[in-house]
Length: 261
Length: 344
Image 1: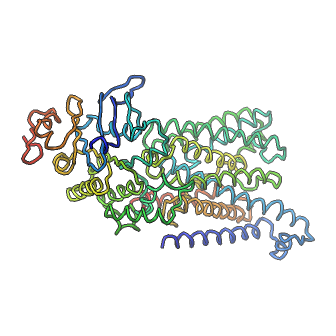
Image 2 (image 1 turned 45 degrees about the vertical axis):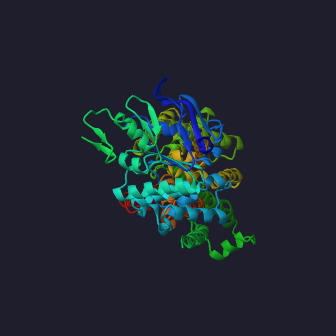
Image 3 (image 1 turned 60 degrees about the horizontal axis):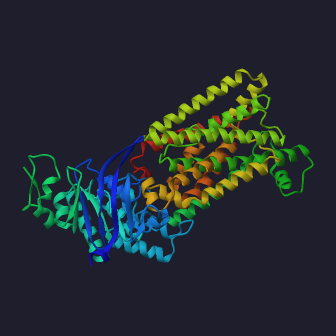
């Protein structure tokens, strides 16, 4: 059953960065598996390699070793065009799209499916509309991106990824700049997309308690650079949560699903 | 709603283009009655052969030269602004125009002639000058790409562009020190900028290259729009970012080089017009921005051309006019950037 739902998997993946000719490995020996219909949260302290891992999975940086496959095909060997139909991205990068309306921005998500000039046909426009409804931003469809709040902007970016119609959505710190209400709303939205739309959703987050409550699976990067995967219940039971931070003063408190002194 | 705004803007810019072109036809250093101009343009001819020559060999080529130069520089500016993700980029501020100018100067010296002399009818020589301009612009663009990979700050990239301009102009001055007096004079005159340097014989080359490059830019609207989201999102949308960037900069280089070789290093138009287009359309969507930028660029250049013949004491250099139009607009944009959508 588990094998059937697997969509992306890594084999002996090592990620890091190249410093001149020297390769600095952050994480290695990763055998991860992303499944359809699941919301997965990637947790780890700053500098642990969360973004680096995500950048490898989105092919923004090539891995130092190992392989990433999507439904048996190597991700690295695919054309950029094919990849753009498999993985949708939501990042924290600054964008220059303030003068685009939400509808125009979400429409850019159709690019992998449109022709040379990127014109949208009726079907594309309907997908854009449905994506905005799903992401809960349809009320703002014709407003400028510049006029949105941070939370609304994030919803628009998620709608854009939805319009891309990829089976996998990868989000780099999607809740980083949001207030508590928008954070919860965004997480619930991502959960719905995973459960109801069957998407494989992978996000990195600093928000431990919410990830623990809402994610179906956690990928924990421990302080000794190991990646432990499992459900919240499993990881809490195993005491893995206490391997997330070096600080001995902080302990994971299972009753509140958060850390305390 | 916004589509209506687009249509209205395009119509207004087109009407303005026609009006300005007609004004450029009518107004000039020599007064020619409108009736005679109409006769000459419609092919009926005129008894005054001098008028015929002025209209057919001076004013009409000048209108075409100016309109195409304005469109070319404006599209260069737009492509640079999107490629470098920097709203204050433009062909002159980033040193692309001065690079082209240096290329021109070097070619003329290498050919054993004096600096300047761009108006020559010798096909070989102006093609060589064109190639020199292309190489010069190309070198500056390569330098900018190299720096932009290292220097992440937009402001720093602008400063590097300005430094490149200083460097090229100092090299040009050094070249001038070994050139003939006439050459120096010609070069200085060329530096003022003017739209009367393209003869009817050169027009097909000049217009042909510019029109092809403008069409090429119109075909790049999809990757241009993706680049609004930054390189990572663009890549995620299936765009080959480095190839796209190279194509865009090649188009920019060609447009800037051709205009610079024929009209001199013209400032501000490339920087300002994309902003005029964005503000009048209220969008950064390139499928609308590209046509509006082409039209607005042609309009502004014709306006400058008209202003340059407005003095009874002779022609005013184009580069004396563009800052008067350009600087207030840039200051307005800088002061109001928090209220202008595309900055946020």
